[in-house]
Image (cartoon, rainbow, N blue to C red; front, side, top):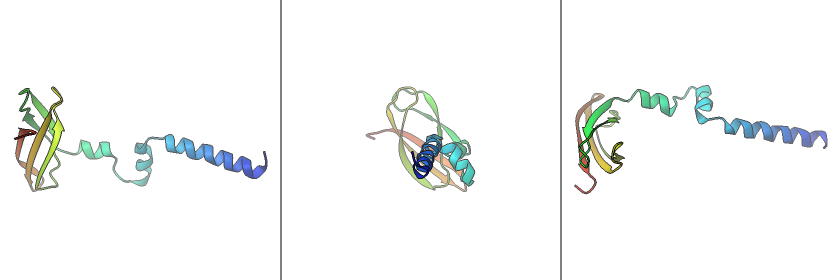
Length: 101
């Protein structure tokens, strides 16, 4: 193998190894918060699943005043429509409904 080809081969190996690293370690180097860090800072709220009636804990993004999203129940795996209202970074109201309500 010629010298230039060895360099390209080594470069490609290093590139592949760096891509195999988790995005977590790559993002830490840039100073951008990771998904895990963001998730740890979100407040939680307890809701009752409208299907199995179990109380489950969900993460709430209070940076949006009103939001509606679907999250699966961690107990029965059915889709719950969650409606969150927040003000000044605090949860004002949270509702859980069946998907077809």
